[in-house]
Length: 614
Image (cartoon, rainbow, N blue to C red; front, side, top):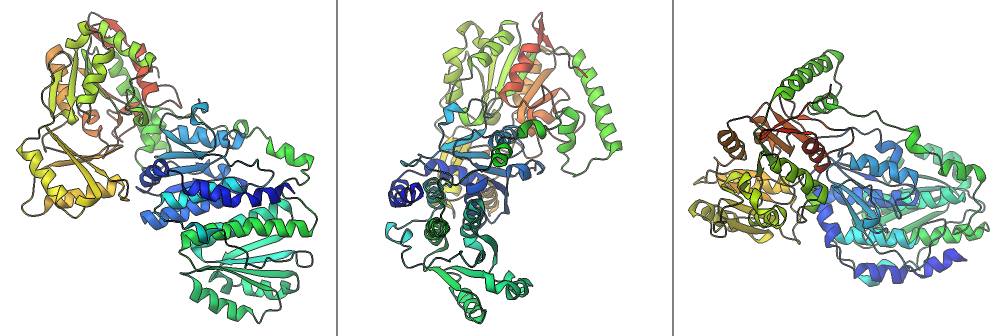
């Protein structure tokens, strides 16, 4: 049978996967660890979603949950909630539905794990990270086997576990339930092995070889024992356990031996992560044995016609979401749950007032954030797209001043000089290191490598503190950047809190700590991106328009976008109804919105005006 060929390949798949690099996935998991997260799967990948959820909760001490695509559509966007989606090919309508939601920016960070080449995913949002895992050598049939094991092994290793090759696939000693005379299977599991129960339930249900009920080792005591007693003549019991749950599982097993039903124990005397991999392999083997018992090849079951019609439903059309406008996005920034009609009316009036005032303004310059605004955060090391470059050059040629307020240093100076014509350099102002170093693009770049006394003191405090060995500290002129090393699980919010505590130790060091998408930056307390905005206003003698992507309270553009009534967010807004509105076509965000704004600016006599429609 084809399914047996897939099972025979598991050892090869496991070894290839075990030796592959997991650094990219590790970084993504670390980013997700900054808050709660949703793990999305379909069919056979629901076991992966459960495994990832359990690993996330264990690592981050944050909440996690699993969801199907339909369930994901019902989740609200939260201030900080990540999402990770498993899809081998990312082509099915359900997968496209999930990717569309992730691309909307409702979940940060957003990650796709797939076998597909990310460059083929042309409609993926700029800040959705697609991580490719090498596809198995053997082609899979109806039930996923090697692809599930490959992704599961990557996950376990990305979350820091070392998997020994000799212990994972040793499943020869396990006895598999018979389903010919007992069509019901009760699976009892400890919480960290729930993914195995989900995998076995999926395989048995999709093949129709057994009706699987699953519950944890303790919840069986809360009523389900009565149902088991009534149906024990047609039920088998499978009990899962690992090293951590052995004591509880053994006591439950001792009690259930009095039940008139076959009892099987799959025990792996291993840490939970490795035990889960071994028992996932056992689940795959068990599905093959049970299917063979009733004459089914799990790789090629007969698929009914109605099943094909269900599979191919145009789900995106049936679940089309209402477009979100500026008022919806501003109200969402309140994080107040339901917004009643009176409050919605207030936001409508506030937007109309702001819009009419904004449309009358003539701006002498634009103070713009860079990463996440001019270029997607994940592509910050690349030059802006050709369309973005053309839009920026149009503004400069029209006589406006353009200021870039950014946490970056020398790199942005060199990048801009690579594509901005020299005759326009005097109109480009830079606020490097979040405004600590201000100059024109036409100016010579000062030495940014040598930190001043204040930054040196900060770097020494952080390097010598509790987290010194877990982080890399880069001290520059006006800024200290701190990043977690690859072998340390520190998400940026936790790292920022620890750094603030270190700086507040006696004698306290006065400094500002801000989190960007890729590091924690420490600045002098009076350093601010707002300085770039004020420079442009002073030089032009006119208001300057402020544009950024992280305008919410705590965002690294909050100060900039709160400093003037005439500010636009291309992504996240504050709740302030007098400023920091997000405009642009529904569904667009980040550089797409900025490009739209720049192209719609009406340029006259060295000023820019933007009429915003109601």
